[in-house]
Image (cartoon, rainbow, N blue to C red; front, top):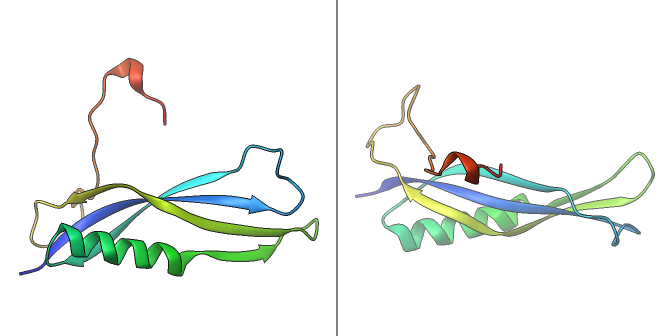
Length: 99
């Protein structure tokens, strides 16, 4: 039987001629359905590579969005995805909020 997983994926931008600047990063949370956590990780990794893309910015520089990996993978407790279903959560102390 398959379960739903939320995959928190990390992407990083690379811009031609801007290697000295701190790169822009994106965390994207995607849902994947898999038979177990190992399969979910493999699916999420494949999806991350598929989502890599590049384009020219207004300055004519090439911007590449590169998949850097899975930050966190969580199995969802619910068997059915409906409006309001929690797909990701984390616990932290108030002073640790860094996002």
